[in-house]
Image (cartoon, rainbow, N blue to C red; front, top):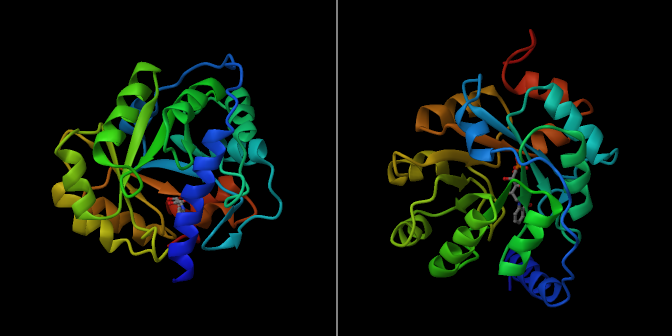
Length: 261
Ligand SMILES: O=C(O)c1ccccc1NCC(=O)[C@H](O)[C@H](O)COP(=O)(O)O
């Protein structure tokens, strides 16, 4: 079997074990901030969800000098609209404590970026202080995704419903019209990224859903490409994380510094 297929299957197996052993933490007291509203009201050409991500299966270690709160504050100073925080420990070197610490120190809404497969993880997300969770279409059956989506709504969490393929989106739209839909330009089975995926899927995004383009965004021309394709927001991880100064990295990406694009 190919290495990448083994990795995705392994991640999901790990999540099943984690759920089986999950002890729910006491709820933290942090102020909820609307993820959806933040994305809908950006001052930039595209709203930015800036990702706090130390490592990934496709890139290995991305940032050696990793302090989640320092990075989140730099993103806030760079006027990101929202944050995405990896909480998976085994494959992304994240931690659920990072999300809580960030919520206690930064005023931006925070998406919990993990592989949510069970109701207990949705409850856990609310308790650790997340404002939103990721639900991955390629990982969840549509009916189960809808159940998790509704549970999240009852707990005051927004959902970023992510798809890679047109087929997955069509299946989800038969049972649910998500408020926020992300097209992941990364194929989770091959790990290859191509922003043409955003353009290919764009005609299928319902007009009332907020359209996010995720992964593989490195420079200003990528922003203009996905904007022209219809995206209203971008989720960017590696290209910001691998730089030394995350505030400046946002300015560079959006062409707000003299030497950009
Ligand atoms: O990033 C990976 O290698 C990865 C592998 C398997 C499943 C998910 C993976 N990443 C999650 C994401 O999609 C990204 O963290 C996110 O969209 C940001 O992407 P990028 O800007 O390319 O870091």
